[in-house]
Image 1 (cartoon, rainbow, N blue to C red):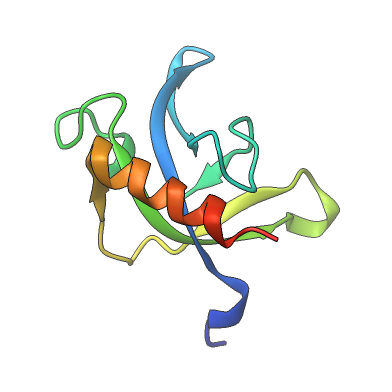
Image 2 (cartoon, rainbow, N blue to C red):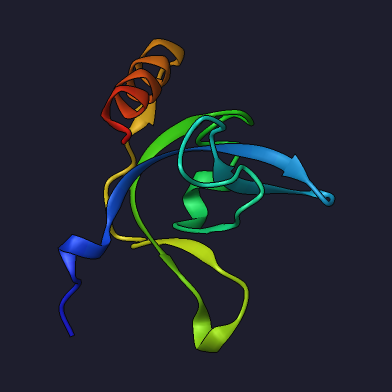
Length: 100
């Protein structure tokens, strides 16, 4: 089954330390809560590749598996796009301007 590209949107996420492990969550200031879990490639939580607090730009969709807790899903095969602090601020500013 092919990916439905219209269900995906760009989301800025960051690696954070929660519950005794590194997790990926949305950056505050977007349509998604920073508490929302993100399922993505494991390499994004590898501190040897990316230090804690690294921000990424993902193409993700909101989903829930069989009526469970909602989460963001990003395909693990997409290339990692690291965001600098300035790039992240610019992305969030564009998001705020584009809101209805």
